[in-house]
Image 1: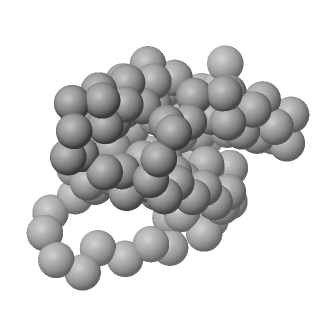
Image 2 (image 1 turned 30 degrees about the vertical axis):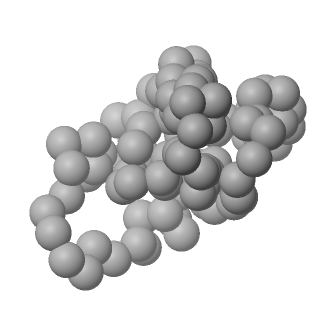
Length: 102
């Protein structure tokens, strides 16, 4: 499974910029990869991991903005189409048999 996080945070004041940087840093340190601007995703190993990471995400939310998350299966994620641009290095196709989850 994959947990996708979509966010739109205000960055007008210094405090808002700081909150944006802290939230983005949290996502990167927690194992999320940037899919595109303001869209991050991470691999989950089952429903228990989903609950754990949703709780961690809820504990790290900034005070303002719009943040949404969605859980999709690997099959659904693999069916995503890239309409414009090139795939990122992180999106190199790896069969599920080669994937290691810890």
